[in-house]
Length: 265
Ligand code: DGL
Image (cartoon, rainbow, N blue to C red; front, side, top):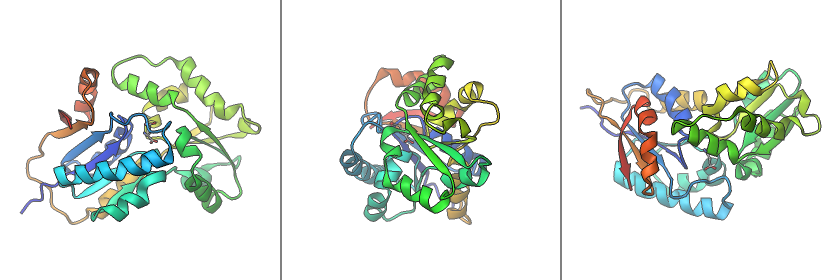
């Protein structure tokens, strides 16, 4: 008997595609549901209370509707605030996305790393905890950027990204005291790896970028080891939680990720 239950990826917008892509590279036969909580976008400017109330309730509804075998919260903001609440509320495996501070600290030669996330993520105690556990001998500088989130959404809708705007956001890290020593940047928002080419074009030579995507892909592959997949892969669903005709502009990009059915909740 083949198991038709999908993997469900969840983010506020298109950022989670940076987690979906390495996962489908490892698991090409996995049926997919990708949910962008467009009705709650952006998360990075919301309060902890709002995120902690919204995300578990919405994931509960989504779990009922799509019957996933596993949920990936492909959003650092939602994971660092609400992961425990979601795990407590739902009886299925939940994989979160948290800032990749551990691999960044392992790679840094200057012992100075930059954490680039949303404003909500970079102020989380979860990040203090990761820095204390895995980067205690590093200087960990942080910067919250909502602009990069908007630029990633625009890029995937087909717009050109102005490099000076990307450069200005990176200055938020490099212009802090000691920032010139940063040699590894943690993309601690899932939208940001979607702009990695633009970031590399404007960052000082030799700066490396890390994100949680590859680690999450390995974790999902491990958790689904031995499970069966459908013989014929059904078209992936891209689900939006609000109606906006502008979402149609994302259709060509979503199709390249295997998400050819667009739905609105
Ligand atoms: N992609 C999300 C993250 O990883 C948040 C973007 C937003 O809605 O502000 O944090």
